[in-house]
Length: 210
Length: 78
Image 1 (tube, each protein chain N blue to C red):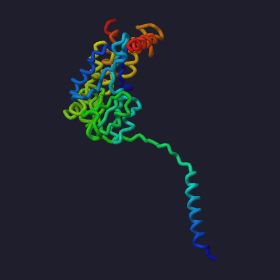
Image 2 (image 1 turned 180 degrees about the vertical axis):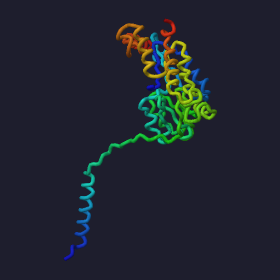
Image 3 (image 1 turned 90 degrees about the horizontal axis):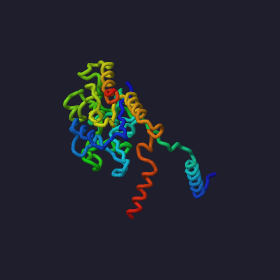
C-alpha cells in the first residue's frame, strides 16, 4: 500500500457542499470548525470551477516541520495525524499550511486561546484506542480501520472527490480524462480555470461597470 | 623600564579595537539549520490492527482497494 490521497476533479465538482456536510456530521465537528470546504473560483462567471479542499496529507508536510511540540505523525499509509494532548494551540501549523487545513475551535484568537488544533484525519481517527469513545471525541470516527474510505469522497454525488490509495485514484482519474478526450486541452490550467477569453470578458465587464 | 600610564592605556585601547575590528571580519555561517523533530505524542495503532481486521494487513489493503475502485463509475456501468 502506498499513500492515501484526495483528488478533486474541478470539472465535476458542482459546489453542492455534500462533502462538507458529510464530514461535519460523521465526526460531529464543532461549530466554527470546517475540516473540509469547497472553494469556487470565478464564482458566478460562466465556466466557474469549484474544488473541495481539506488536509492534503502532504508527503513532506510543512505542519509537521513547524510544530514546536512535535505533535504530528504520519501513519504507514501516508495519513498526517496529530496528538491533541500534545498540541498547545499555537497556530504555527495554520500559518505553514498552504491549504488552510488546520482549524481552531475558538477562531482567530490570541495564542493559547484558540484551543487545540483540529483537522481532517482522512477518517483515520487519532492516537487513541481504535474505535474508542476517546478517539471519537477528539478526532472523530475511524472509518479507515473499518476498511472504508473517507465519507466526504464516498458521499460525493458526482464523484468529483476521490480518495484512497494514490495509485488507484490516479488510475481512475487517468481513465476519466482519456474518456473526456480533447487531447492536451483535457489537462491543465485552461481546462480547470478557463481560458484567455473569459479573462478578457471579465475585464470588459469590470471596465463597463466603472 | 616601564611604559608611562597614558601610553599603556592607548596601547590597550588600540589592541582592544584591533581585536574587535578583526573579530567582525570573521566569517560565521548565518544560515539556521532546522532539524525535523521526532514525534512526541502517544503511539497509534495501524488501521489494520483494529477490531475489524485484527492485524490482517493484506485483507485491509484489499478491502480499501476494492472500495477505492468502486469510485470509478465506469467499472459499475460497463
